[in-house]
Length: 420
Ligand SMILES: Nc1ncnc2c1ncn2[C@@H]1O[C@H](COP(=O)(O)OP(=O)(O)O)[C@@H](O)[C@H]1O
Ligand SMILES: [Mg+2]
Image 1 (cartoon, helix red, strand yellow):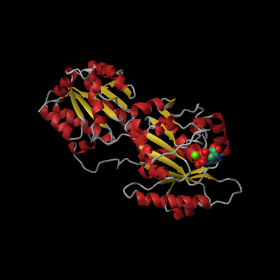
Image 2 (cartoon, protein in one colour):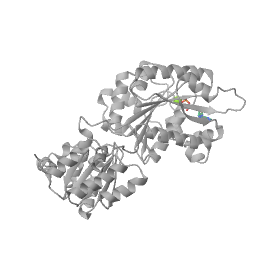
Image 3 (cartoon, rainbow, N blue to C red):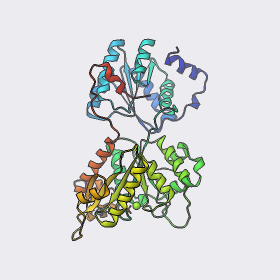
Image 4 (cartoon, rainbow, N blue to C red):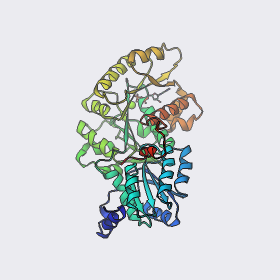
């Protein structure tokens, strides 16, 4: 059996380094025991193929990682170095498994050319074992291969936001939630505005509109992560926008198949994808909702919203039997003097739990809108901000399995480490 080092070196010595695909927009955190490995990681992080990833490195081995991740979420890829003997490496990894999210991929850098250890680690769910001293390219190659393995689970999750009727605030919430996700979850987020003629994402973020979505939809067969990268407008450290032209001078005929290509290109390169779906009905809209990882229906507490939300919920529950039901947001609650359907009745009639109740707050949303800012920036202490933040936490937790494994014994916990 070839050791991983032998494999990587043979690839490098063939001189085909350029064939390694770019590493997607992920977070990579390295905990190194030796200065040399830390420097190698820094060189790797500066490589063009890693330019989309967010890399950080610190000294301290596996136990330092255990400390850090007790208080914060683990990144997409965690690189840990250990100079310890086999038993100790396994024991330290068992502690790491306690704090490691199941979708985090773990790459171990060791100092032992030990096939037994290698096999044991791979069997326990470690994605890769590399032997120090490393070349930067070995690191890049093995991290890239974690995402270009055809069997690897797709990286990104698509959150589709749809309003039960026009004007309920679906777009505003989608933008605010995307913004907060990029900050709170510390993960790259793309907001895609599919409302080509009337979309407001550009306005809400005070950005000049681009033709991003329209260009992508106009040439769906050319859409790949590289083209998408060019079409995105950067909004912040980890936030970008794929927006429409916002005008009525062009006609668009959108096919489901174009949506499919765009979403899959996004999924393969970005962890969080917010899709702002316009309030209308067409085959491609239905396709988008049926193929999202999570659908968020925004409704206001009145009758038309209720009827439409129920129809959407029924369609989605029937069409996605193996997915969680859509999430329902009740927005603009408490408009003075307006008769409203109480939340409990609304929830019962729609057949969905209400995931967030967001008060009507014309001042905060109005100010945010006219400034081209998010409500978090103009009214950080408001009730609406509190409600949206709670919802983001709920969304982030959607896919996470139960916190603690029930099994006991150190090594039995290791399978919780990142899967291949
Ligand atoms: N909770 C709220 N309170 C007050 N105004 C709101 C609230 N939510 C959204 N709005 C405002 O409602 C208007 C319509 O929002 P928008 O997001 O464009 O709706 P949709 O996308 O559902 O058509 C915007 O001016 C927005 O600022
Ligand atoms: Mg909208």
